[in-house]
Length: 117
Length: 107
Image 1 (cartoon, helix red, strand yellow):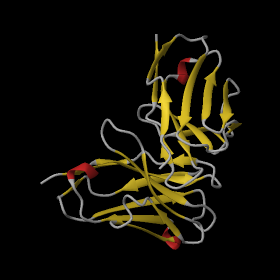
Image 2: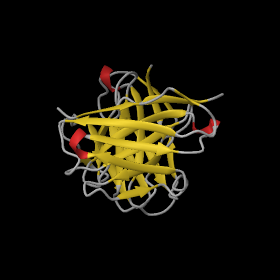
Image 3: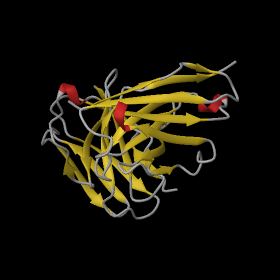
Image 4: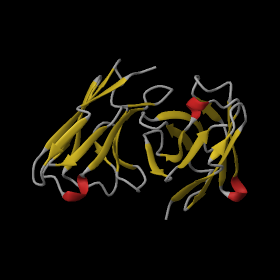
């Protein structure tokens, strides 16, 4: 069945770079896009970006200067890298499969990332 | 960015009742709207897309309506497993944006 699982460090120092991995199973990254979404504590969901099935990417303009999304199709993994982290980047980070440009049909459980010294 | 205003933020109801959740977009988004459910410890679940199309596996007691700027999620005859958080999302234009959520609790 379709599954997505986020992994990465739970704690990141301010000004450092966050690196997260979304490992997928049950589908091919060459057939579906994968999105990254985050949710700060007590706040709403924020779409961060998408890597499409052809490898192209879209980013939220609010994060574009700091964000990079890439993938390794042979390992069924999607990567998020975001630099210059600040405390306001503390959030649950989630990956989700794109449902043919009509929402996100499968989500991971998310990984909590705290930015703190 | 398209702002999505979801209401109410909190809703208490009993099993068997029907409830409605509203989502209003700051500009017309045609029918490019999805609804999600999230329960503690579980992944987000896509319920409805294109404003009114039920995702595979979504029970028929869920329905979505609306187009343009005003949308509604209705749940008829609530079941115990329906209690949780509900979010709307527009995907008409980038960035995709979400409503702030509605917490549906058992009365």
